[in-house]
Length: 238
Image (cartoon, rainbow, N blue to C red; front, side):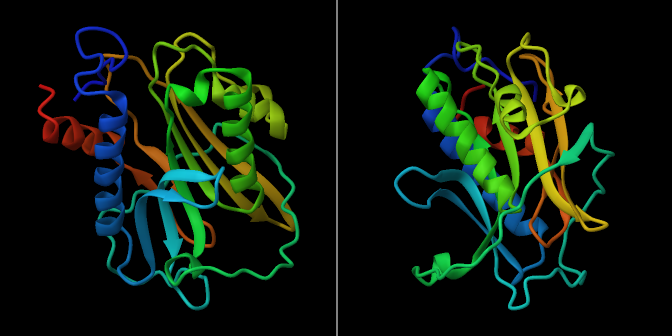
């Protein structure tokens, strides 16, 4: 299903974007949990990790050793295309003690962010969102950002790239302001690097699949088109 404009008539507030995003997050959770090996990873929607950090869909590592064993249990796991850009990134040392509930004792290995109007509203909100994404990436956590907000033109992807030192090929034109971006922290030949896949999308066009690199796990192509279609169908939008 082509992407609809949920921020202008005739689909504005029918239903509100928060309802669309919530339903889409559930569809993404369902897709991830059916695609990745059972018992190794688990996805949850609308995860709150503190007062300022949250993800619309968070993928947790359930494995004891923290490494993908390559066994079966996956639906079609398609190899990601070559990254549009790759550049060095700093991964800070992890020397810490964590205390959490039984669910959150699992290692966070990937997040999918569905951008809201509030994320793009003011300078402070935009900076908070970008800083949150950078913090995930610097801890080796894979991120996918889905920005289909059409009534606010800030380009959060470009702002993130400028914050962490992305190269010019990783930047998008500000028009159109809607895009999908995948970010995969990876270590190669004793170097810490970040692979980036930015895709501009337009209202009326299909959504591309997004590369989703899980920390110490596989990279899979998230079927945004199928999950979005499921969400808007469930909401009776069409």
